[in-house]
Length: 564
Image (tube, rainbow, N blue to C red; front, side):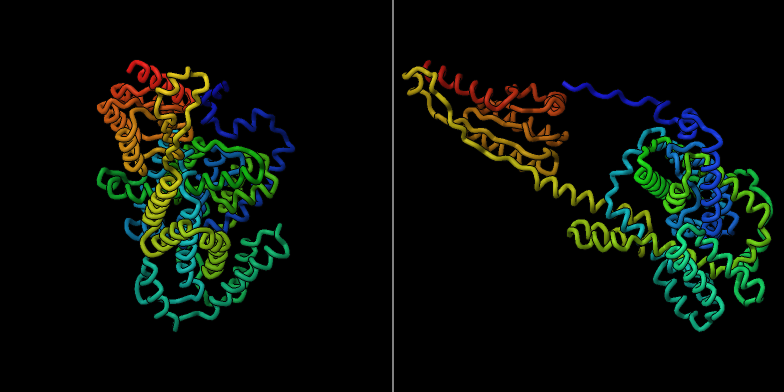
């Protein structure tokens, strides 16, 4: 009998990977590796942080502060050695909608609330359940977000001038942008095209170079030197302050909290999914294992920290985390240094950052969205099965035309229904009439015993609410046909309360008819469940194997016939 492994304790579950790395020994060689990786990631994160914030309707400082404060806390407190925290493209839709409805202050409150929710989720050890979200759902909502991000860049890509505010919903947005096409700025189009082509060229021929930074730096220099007529960060948002973020609590009251709770829940759900997916990617690249609940607690603390320093929502970022691994990071110090380098960039280069053309940042986000779309996986899931294709399309379409939270909910719901249907189709019950071996029985007893076959009803697959009624009817019918029969549960992996009550009800009916019901092959957990729900009242006979039950039925039958 195999012994169960002890459950990991609180300290083991929630010890940050930083402490683990430091306990292993940390010297100058490891620091050099982490410093180089941190600098590399900071160069990648600088343009992305600003571009994502701007696409959300925020100033670039909200993205930079999130990467500096939130990124530092994610690495210092997280359960992954290599996770890089900061603004993520997946949040553009949610954050933009929150800002449009509740303003920047509402976004900060929702971010803080999401942080608290993530902390509670981690402490309750619910991080392991995020993996139960179906893969077609993650692909569907990621592709949907990519489409929305692409649509959100059209205005800056083409330098369009709208007569009113840009609509948030996709179809009205596309209508408004189409009507504004005559206002397109040829220079903005050229700048965005140069940025996109530079990223593609660098990633193909010089993959170790910072493609995003180059794609932003080259157009910025050209626009500044030639005084090209395109909108820049400075012209839209004003000067970027050369200062690190200060600490201030956003306004909180009960009415605001209740109003923003749906937004906070959406932030927390997507943050949990994105951060744990990113940690899994890092595990696959390095052979390490992250601590999911510790990671959620760290993400929660990071979002609280980001909110009180005027930063936007923070999560684990797959692209930057993968860059960190490829750059040779040794541990969490690399992520902490990435945040410190961003702070230095802000203090030193703030006047230069405000010269960045918005068309170049829009080009960067076009590439981000293109990479997010997971086109090959989308096509593969469409071909794999009708069920996967249905879950994928439901999630994708609701994400685009409704909202992200509804898309995830609808996708999970459809996936759950399909799983129940598949599980039910794999369950069933088969009847066998097993011949009885009377070789060792005396001649007169053998002649007196009839019948010479024992009915055995073998169940297969999970016994749960989806099949309980149908299988209960089969057992009831068996009790009407036989004076004794065997119900073999050897191939039943689990049963739920509905199935337990159904089986108990059938056993009670059998008892009232004077039928002997033998239950064989039940695993300890199944037997425990039946006893918990009161099967003792039906007085069934539990036996280890079907053969044991058959032998007892035969013996009773022989004695009964001999007595007659």
